[in-house]
Length: 559
Picture 1 (tube, rainbow, N blue to C red):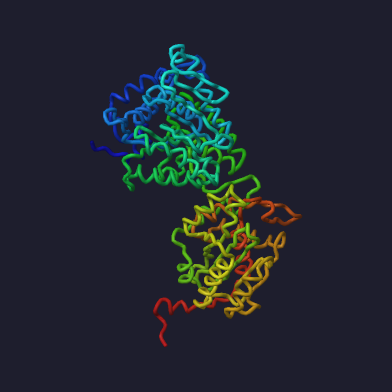
Picture 2: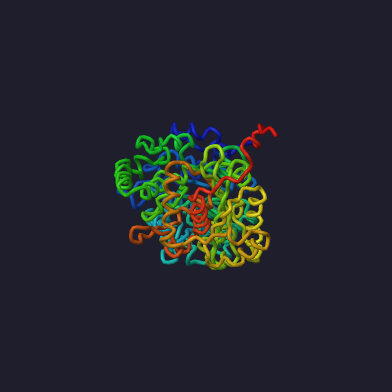
């Protein structure tokens, strides 16, 4: 049997309101049997307690049919066993989760089988537990087959002994379960948990000996950029959907706007809200969305982004709080793909370097800032280092740091000396290119002694290393950076690490000045951004060009 889980024409389909399932159920009899059960389940928290049949749009039945229709009853093997549903808030995601798992419990033949719904918190777990219990108690026939045990958030099959457990990752023991079916609710919240990858791997371990098993992950976009396991799953299932990755055992149904619509800002038009809300007119009320959007617009950019992520499933690039740094509003628009260190050295007439670091649980940040010889735009490139102890002390950001390491923007070291050596190597690369300004290294003087020793030991004169005053005295550099970002006379590489750092920055008003400090930003790191301000403070002095003649680079110099 041949089939594909790729859906390369998904953009056309989603705009037309068509199914995002690329192929019909592999085994139609299995799909129909499961759908007969699923359609009859009651949604008790909706007025009139309608059944799924009465309350749901066709996309729900397409998804459920794909899950159960992938099971080959003759061989006892499920041919598609991993699913991701990414959909906007209020599209009955948790209720659908409960219905799928109750159906799985009823269709199961294995004695004492375990089915589990894993939620990141008790509150989220209850969102699936309550509908599951209610579906059973609301149907006398079902109640004779299944036994709800509310205080354990569990439903037990009275004949097979199979169970459906709803577990909260922040309190219940997830390890040790040998589940036949696993449903992961709100996957995006697991992205910030340091142990999420290992925990979910453990929960899925039962599939190795249960070929009929499955894993389903459900999620909306979060109010912060994707991280950890969520980022991994999202990237993989997008590639599967687009046909870039062949994975016939994995199927993604991703309700998100096509790139062209996002670039044209068409997703902001209310008439297009249906694209990521297939339950529009059912569980999603259009008037409610319009009211929420109007409120978000009054609340500012941060509120709008929160609305877009939750209700329109738009991926967040920056975390925009009400006390955000003003430059954050323009940061994404100044990204230039491919702006590497080598590109800066090739295009610029003068370069300065900013350095910021702290203790072992901080990042060591480096910013290389050049002035383009042709346009005089400022071009920035960043790098950071972290001691491995940060992953233990700051577990809430560990998944993100590991993501940045994979991106190549952050190095995690076991020996702090390695970070100092690698940073000095980059500074010397700028120096050897004959581009480093005379007073071209700006540093936060605190905790920088080892770096100064390393640089002076390599021949950098001490007077070329300039201590940049911090706190409110950095106000001028912060304001300069804001203006240049707003006017698009500064560009950066558009890297996720820096978007995260910029989103973490929080301002404090101090008289007529503002400051951005690590203390205000909390455990979220901003060191690479602070290194940028140190570099800006030097470049703002308009250092003399010291690179090769523009005619030499063009090959026009006649000697």
